[in-house]
Image (cartoon, rainbow, N blue to C red; front, side, top):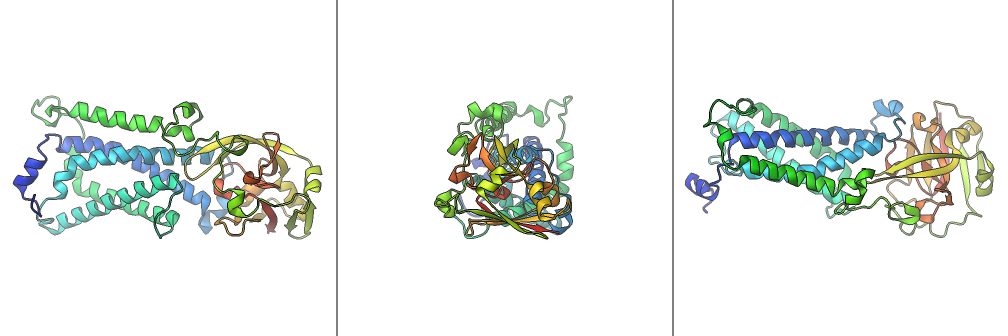
Length: 380
């Protein structure tokens, strides 16, 4: 095939009648729905993990499973978009090589939207999939790049819809009265059925990492939520954090504020203990529930002289990690379910789960459930 390909060559190479508008519109509807779900839940995740200043005082600690649901949907819809994106690109593939690329300014804008949409969508699902594996073979920061690629993809999608709206509207519904319409194309139902089946299959064999009742089908997901020390997965180990040799006898919790104090592990254990069933929900999509026992964070805040409006800065013994220092908004700090946990499922925390003490809070990303806590700084 010559380059640029000639119309006759394209017609020969892509002879299937499924390369037509009605099939493309049906796939576009499905793909658009997954993109919008993925985009909306991604914004929620980004807002909870790295809130802008105007949002900081309004982060909700309830529902308890909020982040588990939204981030699970984010990863599920992102994985489901992979076969849909492949099918959509196959359907419109001949038009991507139309020559000349633009015959007018309007068509040039349309083609620009396609370039932005296709390029950003491919990068978004590729980097997102590798993130679920915690593999980052690129030099740029994943989270910020993933965030801005999402905006570019949505912008490209809106531009593409605006440019193609007449064609989309004309093929949105089947025209039953006309047997020669696009619905008469042989094989369309089988093709769309195969795409739908592939989406359903890939969802069923990966969604179990966040949907408990699908756990038995969790064949291809990168994580099993029930595997790991004390029956829970671990992203960052004590070995990686350099906290393997932390001694409970020597460890002290420093709480700073109007009336600062320190507590040994025994003193912390002598305070009123509370148990809460809370999930750890990670950005990679997996989540797992456990029974956590420890001291309520709001009791520690009140003891130092803070009130219900106080924020926290949490400092970990893991100083080299990306989240060695995190901040907790007042809505979490005053929630009675937010704990400085000492035990999980009745057992003392394993080193990989944050021994001697870790944070566990409702509706909070896993990276902010700080392990190996050394200091709580109460900020008025």
